[in-house]
Length: 190
Image (cartoon, rainbow, N blue to C red; front, top):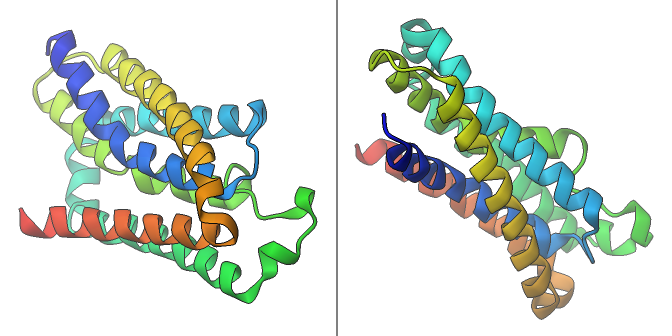
């Protein structure tokens, strides 16, 4: 597999993470270096490790997860998205002091979002294994590209967020739900 193909695959895999990071950037008031680093590192790491797992898990993992991987991604994104929408309407996050607002760059939210957006990378790892190609360099490229694209997504979201005012968290949650629906439709259509 040539580097141009790997780079194109990396960009394609990073698009869901990019969209989610825009949503995160919308909901985080004034993201700092820590927000950028945690989001980029987590999304990049999972985009790196999932092809490796797919490569070594091979047919066993693919056979057991392929039938419902899109449902898993949808469920995880919809869960976090609905939680964000609910909190925005209940006023929970608006009533929190600035340092206590829910932060999608920390804890379970970060883990769930990172896993949900990287499930497709399992199939890429499986494909690379079937082609009998090395996995390390493609996985590194995929992870690095995703980390960069994720940081760009947070930056875009942080600039767009103020346009939505108090409903930024609603918009962010709806974006996550829409990404989950997109993943579901793409996998069910093929």
